[in-house]
Length: 167
Image 1 (cartoon, rainbow, N blue to C red):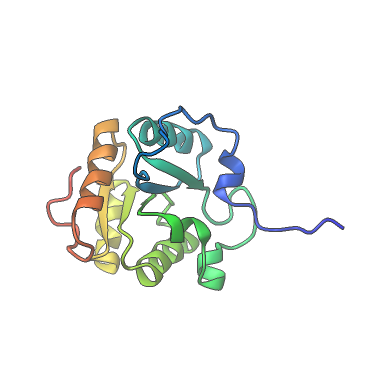
Image 2: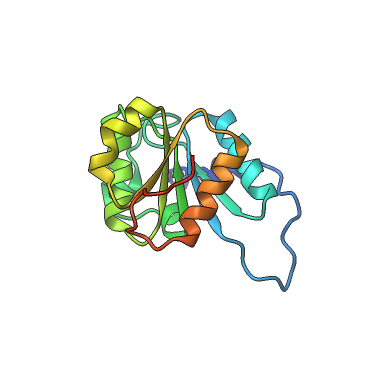
């Protein structure tokens, strides 16, 4: 009998071509989770990060491609976040469900850095709520800004806030 399960970003991205950067015997690559409702934007970020040596997974966020709630918010567990070394979230902060996802990541996975990409007015509005747990990146962002933000997030101790974040 067929059982239904929640689709994960890896289900949507499983056909995206891996570029052969994984070499047997080399240490594991840092894992980046992209939370992005726009498939084209997610794919562009995925390719950029993958081409630059990161293992990447993707989640479209709550309520876009399927109507089920985020498992991290609903159940307190998300395999994609649990496996990530850093989360890059481009979820729309004006939506309560997106803010709940960012809050759940910062609360339940406080040791995992999160980079929030949003327009400057939105970042200014929500910075106090997530202070000390994430690095803001104003969009539109270029390739170098995204790569620098991920490298910065992985290099600094969590809880240092967003002081001196690139962008």
